[in-house]
Image 1: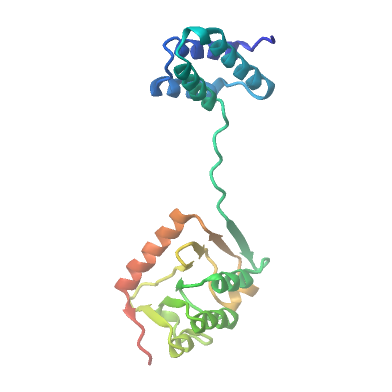
Image 2: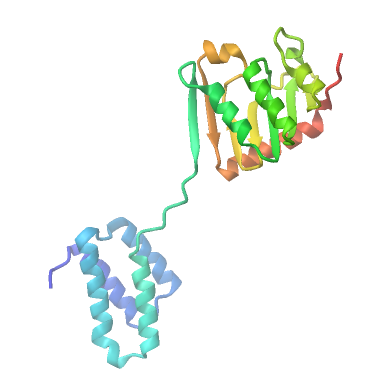
Length: 237
């Protein structure tokens, strides 16, 4: 039988002490887990450590109730298993003018099936507007929040969207509604400095992030709902 490093031998002693009363309590498990995180064996040493645990149970098996011994061994062995990895969260990052930010926005809009909340300072890129109109036509519930200062800029598409029947609320205060984000079906958010304009696509240094992290998505959706209830409906002029 190969020997264990001194740190692993000390850990094995702690496990043996736990086994003395045939119970691995939650307090003992916490202490052992902390020790394993700091000084736990790896690779072949971990396999040897498991072997030592099974040997300890095997040696005393005839003098202990079978079920209790196995329960202790299962609990002890679970501590030696690597922690489960958190589920991966799909995210994408883009930068302009180098990356295809417009394409990323178009794909995001196209991926919406039921709801699409859009909260942007301005919209003047016809490629994005066309995708929004297509979503509206296929029955996606589209709501748009925007700022009043850009409504009548040359190239602004807000009035076109309103004429098509898109539900729009506008910030008419002296401050700016300067957000640039969208939420699709309550499952993904698109955000960043990127304005939905031709200049952002061709010249500006901007960033764009798309993530399905549900905690982040919910925060953005809550902010959208807060603003939607606060800002008034768009009035055509």
